[in-house]
Length: 265
Ligand SMILES: O=C1O[C@H](COP(=O)(O)O)[C@@H](O)[C@H](O)[C@H]1O
Image 1 (cartoon, rainbow, N blue to C red):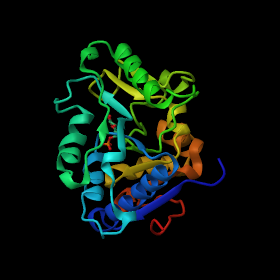
Image 2 (image 1 turned 180 degrees about the horizontal axis):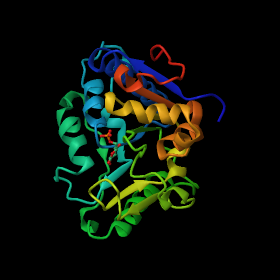
Image 3 (image 1 turned 120 degrees about the vertical axis):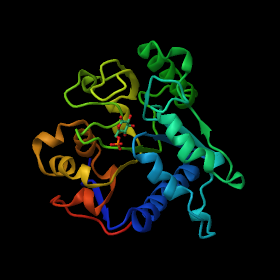
Image 4 (image 1 turned 90 degrees about the vertical axis):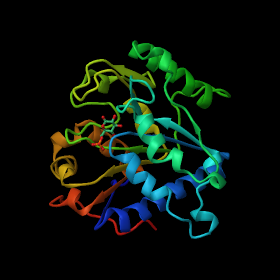
């Protein structure tokens, strides 16, 4: 990858981070719609859905560039916990309650691809079924080696995990599968599915959202140390380089020695 990742650090989440995240997401939307008429985005759970909702549910300035065209969105999950879709641990539940349910009707609704609840007891089957869904969308016309998401919106845990790819876990070595299962997640709940690292690295753009003082030690590690570069978020950061943009607040980047960018152009 050519250039370095982009690190944005904003004084305030509501006033600065959310509007810049909105600009970034809508830029990716508009480029994707111009490319192929649909915007394919995979989102994470955790703290991301709340910040994303602040960004996307804000009133538009009325320009075409600043309008979310939700009816042309296809929303997937970067990772999901094997729990019912209305369970409080479900990433889909968070995204639905914070964002999807609050989209004004005149903006349309995205097509959403949650996991199939039939396979909650069998994470491997759940992952295989989700991969089949991706194959039916991304590889229907010609066969592709990896699905090309227009945008991935990811979180970074305080241990450096992203999606449900955890530090030192054998899943990080997977080269072929698109969607993986994990039954021993160090963070509960233990049973989950996740996009594989090659799929993450292949995405057109990758936006991390990391806010709050609880993220500053891990960001310092990722941006400043060799060891941090080998953590899951660090592997994405190093491997995808300039395709990666970090949307952080000042508390998360305090003491992080890496050049920051101003605002999204
Ligand atoms: O378990 C998970 O954690 C990560 C990070 O969450 P955060 O609350 O620290 O932002 C999240 O991105 C992932 O989707 C989720 O399953």
